Amino acid sequence: MANFKLGFIGAGFIGKFQAKAVAQIRGCDLSGVCALKGAQELAAYANNNNLGDCTVYGSVGELCNHVDAVAIFAPNFARIQIMQEIVDAVKSGAPLKGVICEKPLGRTIAEAQQLVDLAREAKLPTAYFENQIHMKGIRAQMEQLAPVQATMGPLGLARSSEEHSGPHEGWFWDPTKQGGGVLSDMGCHSIAVGWYVLTPYGKPVTFLEPISVTAVTSLLKWGIPKYRAQLLARMGVDYSKTPAEDFATGMVTFRNPETGQLVQAQFTNSWMYDKQGLRLLMDGLGPGYAFELNSLRSPLEVFIGDEAAEAVADSEMALEKATASRGLLTVETNEADLYGYVDEIQDAVENFKQGKDGFLNFAYGMEITRLCQAAYLSAETGQTVFLSDPAMQSTLKSYKSLISQGRGAEILHLT
Image 1 (cartoon, rainbow, N blue to C red):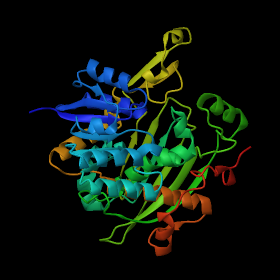
Image 2: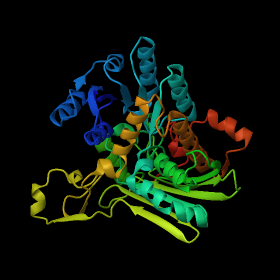
Image 3: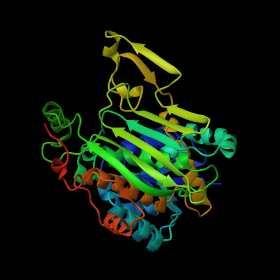
Image 4: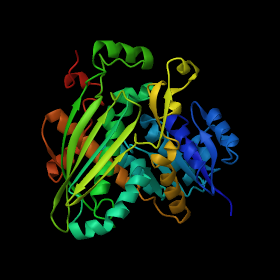
């Protein structure tokens, strides 16, 4: 049987990470790439690492005609146009079995709804990529605690954070292009994994009903003049004019529709975590039991002294978003697998082969977008957003945060 052929739209940071994940999946090739920059480099990586015969294509439509499924790994502001090109290709006969979209599905609820509608128009199975739900540690604790949960009751509190020192590319820092700041970039991860681990074992991912969202957004580091100047010089983004939040925290309350029990998911995210590198910290508390996951607890550490550090070219060889190349370093030997990238691709491929959506589909991705936008609205107004209120539901449908409009200076304190 021929290998399943994946095509990547976009060849930036996430595309390169996902290519490393594809290399660990049997029966799956990275067969094509379409991107404004980096396509040749990514195709060369695929061809040099036994990922199949990878070709660079000049258009989305051309790519769609040579692969079994495409993955949208392009910047947030390009998603709608790309999805429309995919739909046009399918209507013209492209034999796609599915489409993948990296988080977030949309910068607003309206954008996310457009992607859902376009996929339905083309009758395409979908997979929304939220890698942390696919992390082996998260899945293992769910299975390990299932019998305990059945006896004692489900988790009542989940806490999730993702923090690092900031994105790699300028458009990520630009709230008008990315859709906000760290809440849009990483809050979607933390909210999604919190919702997932609170869900009673064996129930659908949307079983728990979101009731309310309370959140705070702040500009704690990158609004200070010294660091604003560094950001402008490094990324070309001026936070004195169009700032985005570098810290966000909040709480989502969910209701169990069978028991009426309320449970809560706390999220914390920052672009100012200047330690070893990217940290994922998750825990859950239930009656008489708990779990905790910390991605910086690695079985491997290395030490590099000052003199030896001159030989180190890339600090990220040790860990994503690492900011140091000397001292005691935490080393993750397989980040693509640790963070869930391998499992989410494998899930999408296996489901697409059967003509089904992935474990998480575009409709689910839209619900995560809704919760993130509710968090922005809560932070703007200083009030809890109650999601069952019809008036609030109507407001959120057309809502676009002040930060994503480039008006963050109105609500973020600049020094």
